[in-house]
Length: 466
Image 1 (cartoon, rainbow, N blue to C red):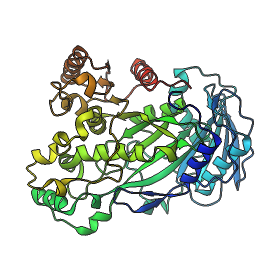
Image 2 (cartoon, rainbow, N blue to C red):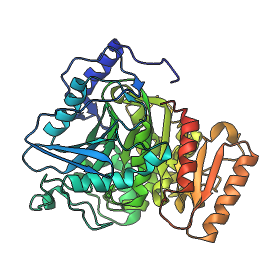
Image 3 (tube, helix red, strand yellow):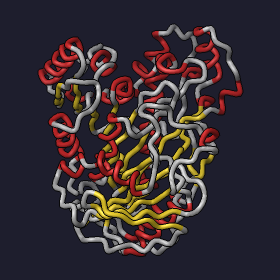
């Protein structure tokens, strides 16, 4: 790996202790984080192809089965659960070298936090390369059957906590849409609060409400934006892939939507994964709210990730952003390294004729001194194809090869989108920007040549060596 190499036990201990602290939101309020793994640290965490022996996990219930050549052990405690962690071991890829004791501690911590844990042992599956990443589709279905889960209707909204209370979903009492693919040594933290509507200055929020002719309610300041994150409990640092959804209601099922499988498949690369959904602006909603502060939102989020890189063991220099359709708007902003400068940062607000001083329209971040550069982006059609061709999105007259991060963009479902993508890619390449593209035949992400290209692109730009 690049950088300082593998973390020493001392650095790993400091990183683990930080996991037990609280995380400030943009507004500074502490938010509890986990997990609370209490076992001694391994002498040196590194990646290897060394096999992991069968794990004896303490729990109330255990179901075991074999499906499609993969052995599934399902562990769960009594009581209602709404999330599943699929712990994929012995995949043939390099995995964190930990003792069975350390793996057990990670899994038992998930069980304590009301996850159903599915250990998927690939020892006899023998999948190579991209075939492993593409298997995530079948893996989720097999894990769901092994746990006895019942799938919610495709593309239906993820049920709210209130509606879940009376729903019988499976013998492990788990909602089948909330599945997370984990490589060994990784864990998942759900619903991490990082941004509140109140972090937008009151004068700014009031002006948005005035322009949209909607009531301004001070109580809305407490509404939050959250993400789910998959990350290694112990070092070394890994790269990170963020995923921007496209749900106007602020939350969308991760499964079974095909557009989400790309991100879950990338978990097999030992990448930290951030599921960042659209912020549901209480006044403007999407996209109107983003039309006023989208640039600042994007910059604040990347600064937040970089400010918390140590506790998540992520490399702040190797962040890849993925977004599909409308979800590609924020990664598209981040491709432009200049979007954190005043000329662009207030561009949306100025375009909306927000007559406020800089102080009242600035969304302040506790990590404001950190850069907003990302290593690369993988962008979908729709918003990306349309907006990335504008001067505001891509300032071509200002040394684009230096100011635009490498990106992969695909076009689908319409000749107009294809034409715009071809024009954008040709212009970028002519000006020295690193860019690749693929054309699709539908609006969903296929596990075919386009995925192979995007996967290879991420491997090369992020310099993945494990």
